[in-house]
Amino acid sequence: MNVLRFIAQRLLQAFLLVAAVVILNFALVHAAPGDPVETIAGASGGMSEELKAELRASYGLDKPLPVQLGVYLSRVVQLDLGYSYFFNLPVSGLIAERVPATLLLVVCSVLWAFLAGTALGVLAARKPNGWLSQTITVLSMVGFAAPVFWSGMMLVILFAAVIPIFPISDMRSVDASGGGWRDVLDVAHHLVLPSVTLGLVYLAQYSRLARASMLEVLGSDFVRTARAKGLAEHVVLYKHALRNAVLPVITVLGLQFGNVMAGAILVETVFNWPGLGRLAYEAVLRRDYPTVLGVLLFSSVVVLVMNQLTDLAYRLVDPRIKAR
Amino acid sequence: MSAILPLATPVPVAAPSPFFEALRMFVRNPSAVIGLVMLATIVLLSVFGPMLYVADPFEIRAAPLTPPFDSEAWFGTDYLGRDVMTALLYGGRATLLVGAIAALLSVLIGITIGAFAGYYGGKVDGALMRVTEFFQVLPALLFAMVVVTLFAPSLVTVTLSIGLVSWPGTARLARGEFMRYRDLEFVRAERSIGAGNARIIWKVILPNAFAPLIVSATLAVGAAILFEAGLSFLGLGDPNQMSWGMMIGSSRQYVLSCWWAVAFPGAAIFLTVLAVSLIGDGLNDALNPKLRER
Image 1 (cartoon, rainbow over the protein chains, first blue to last red):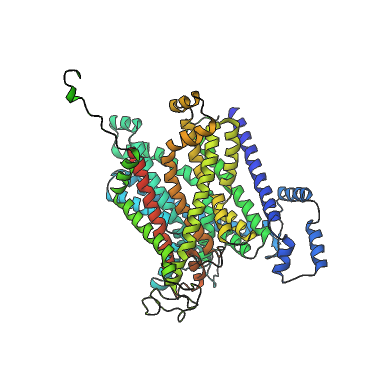
Image 2 (tube, each protein chain N blue to C red):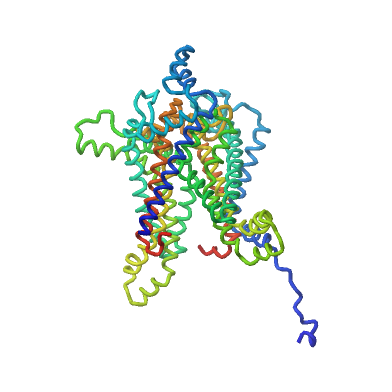
């Protein structure tokens, strides 16, 4: 019962946050100098005054602001995010079309970084001052300091000019044919460089976090008890300690989805990856506001959902945290 | 006892002030000192370089795509023939200035919101934390991109938009610290002698919570520099101001014919952020001696 009330409360909060994002979207576009019609007119290279007035009427821009807000809200509720005047397609369709590519990139990057980072961190924790620990310290600094678009382009130089074994642009080969397994392999081949670039950032964070959290767990009472019982060292390390040490890494993984979008925009731009990030970038450059705001709203909702799921999963896994 | 041997009474030795103790720890930390020297060099070069070497970074200087180590252009030229070294010298200003001011802005907003939320608790905390969550949910880079394009890219809009989206982390940290301190004895003592809330927040608790906040402020500078670089890379920085991110972004299509026009500015960003985080780590060790063995 308590849990149900907790979930209901969370849902209400999440709903209010989404509403706030929508209202902010609306306010931003209307606070900016010039109205959307001027922007369209500018983009299409001049327009007569009558045509502008007609467009304003068709977009409902001649009505009072609260009415416009109401119309906008009711459209968003029906998943109608407007019409892109650059791509000439409904925004929701555009987003749906681009999501799979971004999802593939992000999931692959985060997954390999999580596995490798945890492994590195756990190995390093066995010798807190060993060479692996020092490597992780250096790695986490370098991973934070290197701009992701720069490291991506350095990889492009390396793999285009020096060792040309991976494609450096796009998601599929131009002459891609056959489909089926050939297509899967082709995409995987194109995926290597972007996901290595994006994953390096997370590898740096996860390995450092995993090491710190493993060190902390190894110093706790239950590990001492496990050792005192005479359990083999590998059982203590991998069955008792690891499970607890992974929790903080998973939390960070779930909570940082807001940053994932930033990484995706930059990496997709470098590698011409046809995902949501590049859609946002192209739309911003073309001042295609319906698309930009649609992507902003969509990614806010994704971040929100991920945050709530992480929180919920954490509560299920860790019985010490009770729903308050 | 002391009456018998008055001379043996220990002379009270002034404990070293915490500030000098921290300074001593910082100076003894080789990586922190290296970071400081690196950052000082980069800042000096960016501030005084353009004064000593007056040139237009956008001017076409030599044949396009001149490789580095050329007598005309030491660091080579980009696809238009603009000198990479000149752009490096002039590009640091925008990056460092925007990074520093945006970080300052985000730390000020973060500390203020976190302080009120943590100190007052209850409804104030609830309301302020909803606002913080709102800004955490908003994808920062995308939101900044929208703000910058809507209000024309300039140093001011870029700085404001970065500051506006990057404060939630600091706010959460400050909130935790203020919650921890607000009911401790020395704060209650202050309250009992009639100190007002404003005095307790800014003069009593803040100085005590300073150590973790200053470390997070250093990290905020690094993050803001990367943020600015990302925006300029996407072509959304101030178009009249050369910056390292802009150099990389404008040479993006030509990276295979002039790696130097991308590698050098990127290395400059990398070294700057690395220097800032080395300093941050050093400050962390110096200000939290208990954590040193980690």
